[in-house]
Picture 1 (cartoon, rainbow, N blue to C red):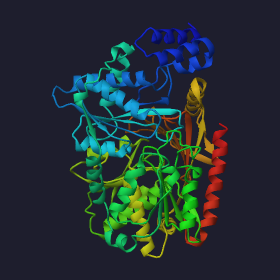
Picture 2: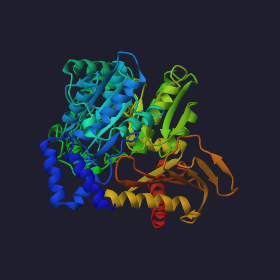
Picture 3: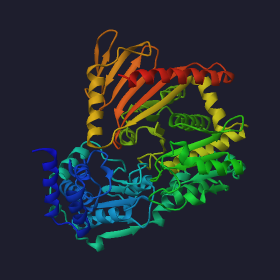
Picture 4: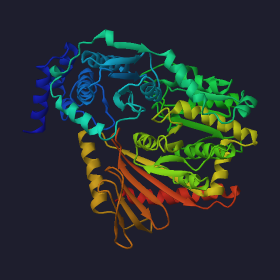
Length: 577
């Protein structure tokens, strides 16, 4: 059967099932007038992976809609009912600012309650990390957050958390996925809500969450001294609109300057091209206000408030957007140095980072006598390390290059509320020294080495794009480069095969991490290139890391230009593979 016949058959199956008239109208329109859209909407089932669901909203099996959300939730409910015989089964649900997020959250609540499972549904949009906190605080068996993070407005998504407040990992992930895949018909989903099992939560969780965040502060006296330093904050229309300012005020900061137009909750993100704080354009309105108010710090969070972008002043009074590795380095250096200064280091502390995040974090941790762990991309793996060491060692902090950071262990996902407050405190600490956070970053490079990183991504949309990305990974795996930009490859780490190949000795070593479609090429000069398909977007990503020594701050620009040129040469060559 050809692809057109397959998608028509799936579309007709949906039309014969228990769907509403609006969905039926959309499907009939595609069948009659838009074969291309019909193919994209039905050529596969939207995959429920270890990160849950994420996709374009609309009718069809490959779209986010009431029915794909319902089928995923029915699968989750079935797993919960099989897994635990106790009567105390409950799920916390949060959602962000995106179009239909509240509706999808209510849909999930309806299905869970129809299956006899209690639901704690937030009364309004809330940050993803607060959902993680609520799962632990309310002793829920699971959690759900409806969000597509920083994806374009036409996207939405659905992430599942387990009782530790972290996104699902083994063995629950594969078991839940299996249950979801068993739901093949919409008629298998029970949408008949039991409203007596749905409980509204809100302010009381906010207050507990903020009180816990306050305990992470390390320099209350310095904040009191510099409480009025100007901080510009934007939620970029998202769920940080209330909680980030609350956290900053709880730490003691009193001069928080809002971007009024972006405080408006808006699912189409009308003031930006993309609600991604990694992109300078997303913070442009905040930057304009910073220039007018002489702000010390600019912070912008993504729609579900798990990631934060930071703009700081350099020594010349110019504003600079830090990349994710730079922010992670400044934040972790602040935490490590202050833990040491205040006598909190006992030799039983650790940090965690992902394999694509700067090695500078590990170098700093070693300097302070703190253990460092590397994990696969995804904060759930950082949370897994925290859980494994609970009661035996203390988690100081951790992060990933994609602007996600965490301190403390009462949240088990990246947390831009916590990060914003601690970065502001670090800025006050730097100000007390007559420095900016950018000056602190240069000090770090002089002390530990100049680590320079860059990430490039290539977007390949739709069915053909997914196939092209798959082929690119196969090409890299079967015909790996022997050298890049004139430098020999020393090691190839294949995380899918869980093997490291030593290109010099021709030896093989096991990789003791879960399987993942990731390739890393380490060069003999210490440079590293990582290639991986995105798990949440139609992209293939390339991560470049180079390093050198910085003898004096006066050499910073020269060294940075040299390292940037090296990355450009490496990128040009590997993208031509």
